[in-house]
Amino acid sequence: MSAPATANAALPRRIIKETQRLLSEPAPGISASPSEENLRYFNVMILGPSQSPYEGGVFKLELFLPEEYPMAAPKVSQLNSWLHYGRGSLFMMLIKDALAGSHSPCLWIVVAVR
Image (cartoon, rainbow, N blue to C red):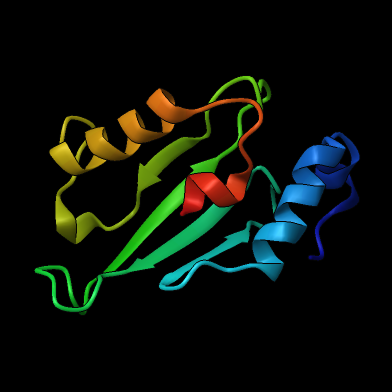
């Protein structure tokens, strides 16, 4: 995890530990890695589950940990332009509601990604 010293300087120890855990314990079908420019941003890729309408699909998301994290839930943005999932789409509402509704400061990034 190489990043500019300025991006790491103000990063809380909890985020560093959670990032290490996320990288060492990847979830099946999901990859997540921190951005080198800002370690609060994660590039997430979810593979469509087999035997589902989404099989073969690759869904790209960006997960952001706000300054208030862990008291505030991570923010999620969809990056696949071809999916046409905008702010009000059912897909994005489900993801954001799931994170906001079930968020607790005792949860780790690994839980948000899974």
